[in-house]
Image (cartoon, rainbow, N blue to C red):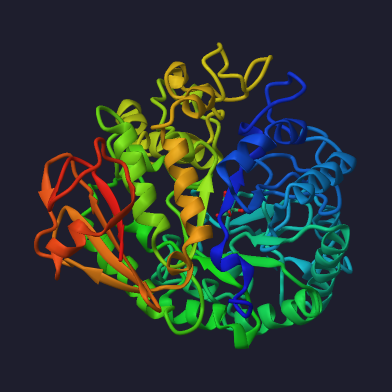
Length: 550
Ligand code: GLC
């Protein structure tokens, strides 16, 4: 398949450097720690490493508030170490994708410092300044506007007040961003994961919001896939990506619809290669992430089914359960008790066999779970801390607020990577910046690698299957059993090969007898399963997953 882009059969691994591995004992993960664990990534078989932000930053939002796009924060290491990591990865045949945040900067970035200095600053217009705020709210609680006492005007921040939004209407802003991106590509990096990149175009005049439009904040309809978003991304492509080979550009896009995503990822339009959409991770909530309800599997089928179909002819999906903003999937939609290993494998199988590029978030390959946070003092994330303060100030019961925050808070994903059963899980020789999950005594990389039946080895086989079986990367997708509340089933077909994927997404026995041709399928080659001994027949045990081929 020489004409297909390489990333269709690739798997990406996300590292959140703060929480991955600490090489210098300060309790915070760093580039030295990443370099020390490349064998782990290679053993898993991944193709691309996506590194969450390592640029200099006040760390108000753990690096998603960048104060210098051209360097590495000393807490993570040096530019020299980043070059060394890049060389290590390339020597192992892997690529490096950098996280890039250009919807906003840190308020400590020199551009913003200059912008806020006076109303006549040449960079005043690089950000949004107004005498009177509009009614937009911030993703991290409260108004999206902050008063600057010195000049008496307010600036816009869709995220924290230390993350002022850049004004992409100003051509100098765009030109500065593109030239910075070009310097990174010239340095050898293989692409970008563009943070909330569908927020960069705002409705001129910044009118009041009414609905939020697919994104939970008031005002969202004026910047989620705003009026000039396609124009800006096409310009970025011309100025940065055109004429360069073998890169990956993935846009994180909260609130993106299938119709938008088709346009963003149509190769003929030259915008981005794939997007992160949020529809499936919003199925267990309604407007607020703090009151989740159980997932109805039929909703997941409907949602994934529509995305698979919508991007079947042109465009491409990203596939993910986890990242640094989502709780751990085995705790969320699996069973992190009795069936932890089985359900982690089942959910991994379900996701990876879809059409699209799968993303594995650090620790997902170990079946790492959510953390039980005992008090507000154990949280580190600005989203959680601000929400708690706001809710308590409004008179809510602190214990109830704390309990409501357990399932969905982002710190669930940010507890340290569990390397072994030593006191800090092998993450650091110092005091970790955030608590280590006590279950690392049982759940850790050393134990998983030694156990042929671990989640790790199952993920390794899933990745191998994508590399070896073209139907996984490129086959047509057909959803089956749409109305079954427990069994998730679909086929993939490419030329003469057909795969059947059946997953029991429940702790009760189930059957796939209702599938067309079920008997014949049950007798077909079994390519992959999480069941022992090798299953046969039409009955599925709790959390059983199978991939048959014929
Ligand atoms: C993205 C990041 C998230 C961050 C936000 C603001 O959603 O994934 O971690 O807080 O953008 O940059």
